[in-house]
Image 1 (tube, rainbow over the protein chains, first blue to last red):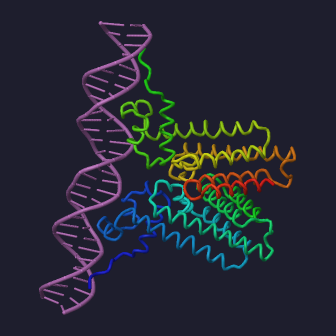
Image 2 (tube, rainbow over the protein chains, first blue to last red):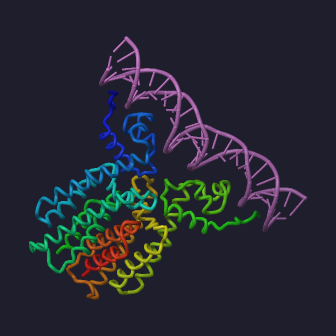
Length: 193
Length: 193
DNA sequence: TGACTTATTGACCGATTGGTATAAACTAAT
DNA sequence: ATTAGTTTATACCAATCGGTCAATAAGTCA
């Protein structure tokens, strides 16, 4: 009956995500979001309800499309050591390519966790837990194929790899250069050898 | 001639640090700072000049008194493996004890680095570089005493330990529990074995 | 065409932002 | 007592904050 929106909600969320990702929730103003999306206040509140609701949407979409889908693709390689290698390579590549140095949206929000509501906290925990589980599955699989020594504890090592991943993401936002990031990767691989 | 300030600048900076540390620069309002220090605007601007200048002071003082002094104490132990063990123990202890879950002021600011000015960036880089150097010295020392195998590359391993430290600090802000944090520590120790 | 529904626009809201200015009260050294 | 500097307490500033709302425009239906 009525009239469809003449801007794409999905694209709008993606553009908002870029801003939240780069600047964080607090430092992102409504004006920033309106400019990034290219709409005005009325349409914004009609479409998203509030700044916080849009943030929630952004984070969920990121978790779904960036983190989950990428890990699923690596998992399909059926070579655990290669999958972990490729994951770290991808992170380093992404960090070096992104001129805004946004890092990882989930990690950025994780550091800010005490200042967010319970829903956001759940999303972040779920996302990072997902990455930890990915590592754990790869390690177990590697132990079965013999690519990874039996002496390694999958649960503990997975947490170590996650911590390295998080550390890499933080340090990639301006402290470490390529060589240093590669050193982190090497240490990650050492942990499963 | 005149009259000395009747509030202690040092204490004031410490109180301000607590707020910046917990909430970050953007999310901290002037009202927050005034309440935490217990002075009013006039005194604030007379003493510190601006919010940003106070932030700079806070970060420098933290780097000097929290990070540097603690590492210096550990370094005096003359037992590299023990020093690294104790460092991670101290970080875990601190993270679990702090009910505000503030994490590490330097790490928090490091993640926010692209949104800060050059002076702040320098302070953060210098601080993290200092921790990396601490690790490197301990590893080299351990290799000399035989406590750490010669096969380990001090420079690379130090970067790995720093990444683990940073990851631990981030995850301790709400994602990981004590058991998981201990797992990270175990992986750190594994890296030097 | 006219009714109905929805989206867009832009003005408007009170509250808060960081920061300035002012004046009076106070303290201490000259 | 004068003087210099500090404290408190306000009042004030323009700008921005997130958010609301009524009018208007645009599309779909009968």
